[in-house]
Image (cartoon, rainbow, N blue to C red; front, side):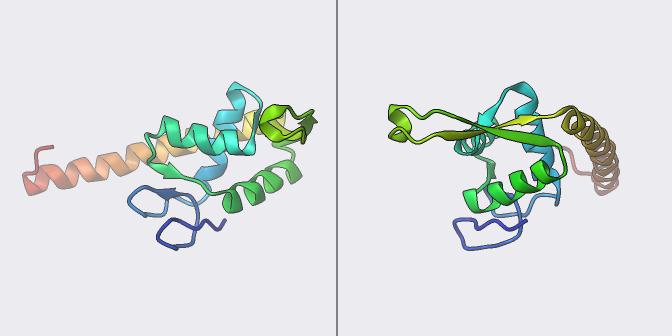
Length: 134
């Protein structure tokens, strides 16, 4: 995965502060969006930014290779819808999650929650030892 942040950094999906998010998390976040409804590419970029209060910035140059990989592994499928005034009559490509994608999403979410709990436990232990109160 390669993303270009406004600072010119490369590497994945970026948080507003320019820090690289855990590799592979972009796939999970996109599958999560598609588990709710079919979406087209720019819609996914905007939705991810909105839901994260602009914490996550995903660029088109990063999004489409991820979508192509997810489609190749059977996690999603795409279809075209006729275009309207917003697209000057050009069709839009929509993506939808498959049954296999739902299974992959469930597994990824379970693993993310496990790792997140472990990280939080370490951080909390370190804060207690350092006398930090958050």
